[in-house]
Length: 215
Image (tube, rainbow, N blue to C red; front, top):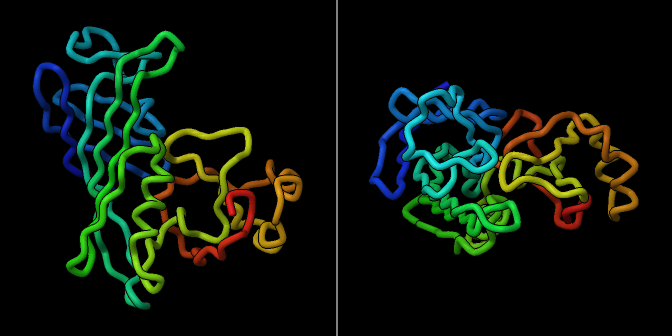
């Protein structure tokens, strides 16, 4: 598992650290401090004892800071696979009176074959920012990852901002018949596993619009 540069910024400046991501768990190393989570808004210190005051926490997770990093991604460019990278900026605001954060922003850019595309950063969801990127690409070019897979979906109960896609590769025929929320409830609890939007496995099939709960 390769590590990637991870730039942390807060009111006191920046720390250049590293990040690993095994497809289920994100680990960030900032100096001697390690933070672990399943997504970027729940990175908790592995050891909270003597944690410097510069690291602000909300519900025990980092906040009031920004992250900059890159994530590897596969692009299918007119039937040719290309290895590329997503450049990601995550901005986490301060705690608000409702128990959440006053701001949560994800901005993504992608360069492929001499073309650069950007998301708006307006949605607050990794999913929507990635789909914005996809919409700017031609019909013969697509991101080859779980976000575009035929067998991935989200729970109607709600989901996190990143890494909460339900994989139904174990129920392919049944999932392909889902057209309504009522249909989806029949298989909802029988998913194979949770996956990240950027994950890829050897059972990937490009999504047919209108399939499943998310369409």
